[in-house]
Length: 384
Image (cartoon, rainbow, N blue to C red; front, side):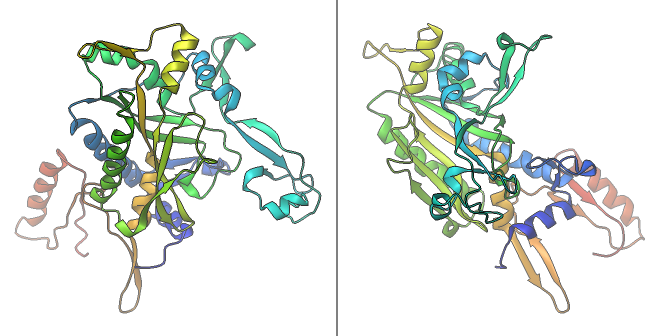
């Protein structure tokens, strides 16, 4: 396989109509991207494969599409208003901004800027909330403050009872969702690996306390197997267990599925045992009962949650990187994407090579027949 760099992926994506920089004619908008004709098809296919694996192939998992805008108390209960911060430092010399925890400790000790190299130029860290804040209604005042959701999970938690009652589900069961989320990242970058507007594919699985550890292990293996189904090379995937210093405040256990990107081993998906933290917090802040009654064992409890959380954009980037190859020809080199057929933006190409015996008309009829069922490409240029 050829050496893949992020620059090569970015170039291919723009050249072939997968991904463009947002608002490019106005000088672009940093860390925001638009999906072109091939990109939007690939993105749709990634989501469809995930939805089939998570919802259609399980009897006890259903879907949800929660609103992006939610009551601000949701984010108070979840801890995002108080604790969803990154430590921000500025360089007084070059005016760049950084996350304090991403600066080399040796440089941080002497307050040296990682960009311009000026010593003593970094400010003290201040906490920077990553949520985008806006206002609802005609008047911009404190009571009208609302947030663009930083994750899709909370929409599932607040609808736990609605979904359970309307779908007549019994624990264990899951709720899956694909949707947009927004984070005002201090240092986004590496193309679509980390952006401020992104799309998540999350499933929250509600289980009885005491059964959580076994079910957590089951979902770890299921999620790793999913990427094999997508055609991702096994040797490029691994688990990373969160140590005590990495665990989120809500997590009993957490594993990342990591992929070896051109920028190194990075998180592709997270699997978390969130215990009863989320439902307990929403019960406390809303005053509504979030417990579950087990009518077989005649007991009531607040369910534990096993979460699988992946990003659409990051998964798509993984597929592009993993499929990329440069083939050496006799006098040239061509770029090839070995995408799994399930993911391929174009499923078939109709290419009549001769312009006689009614061949173009036959080919065009085949094209129109197939077009009803899949994305098909047609070209009667006469050469391949």
